[in-house]
Length: 258
Ligand SMILES: C[S@@+](CC[C@H](N)C(=O)[O-])C[C@H]1O[C@@H](n2cnc3c(N)ncnc32)[C@H](O)[C@@H]1O
Image (cartoon, rainbow, N blue to C red):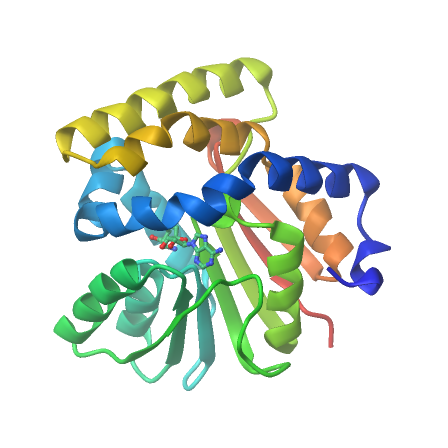
């Protein structure tokens, strides 16, 4: 995290980032790869079963909100099974799409899915806290359903660096509801979903061991309004947000100033 970035960010957010890092680093470093290696073959179906179909709606809402033009260079961060890249290529087949994700298993599934539809997505298997691309190399960067697992200030700063001036960052994730009652109900619902899905799909030990983490990661995460402030603090402009009822999911767009 550079000093130039630090000075713009509210101290409360930096404290939250430290708390998230202190509590979750062991899981981020040692367990998540095993979880995603385990779920990769059934990730897309399981997300829909667990969310009773909501995940598909949320994903569609995200990808249709992305403004694309012929030949745009797109980077999908934490691309998983390439759901975002494939949807964008369906709309605009001449995009140059790159995907980056630390999980080889998720990307392997993603490559199969892209090839089956005749699309080319350039795959990078690497941790996203440092992006292996020169400054200003993309017109659009997307990041869906993964920020809870990341040091967001570091990753969003990297995203800003690799975007060209005037380029847009599109973000979607499950966020912390502002209403405490909604947050409690949502936490209980999520825990039941994670357990039910792990049982239904015969998940391995790593996924079971993360049941509490998946709920806790949202408890310590940001609300939609807080995420907007964080994006502005990192140096993005024209930050806009749309939220699902209760603020359980939100869609942000943020532009790198010209
Ligand atoms: C819940 S999946 C979301 C995948 C995809 N974006 C989607 O919307 O379906 C989270 C993804 O983030 C990836 N991930 C988590 N932490 C990461 C890190 N530090 N570096 C790279 N990828 C990471 C995981 O490997 C996994 O593929």
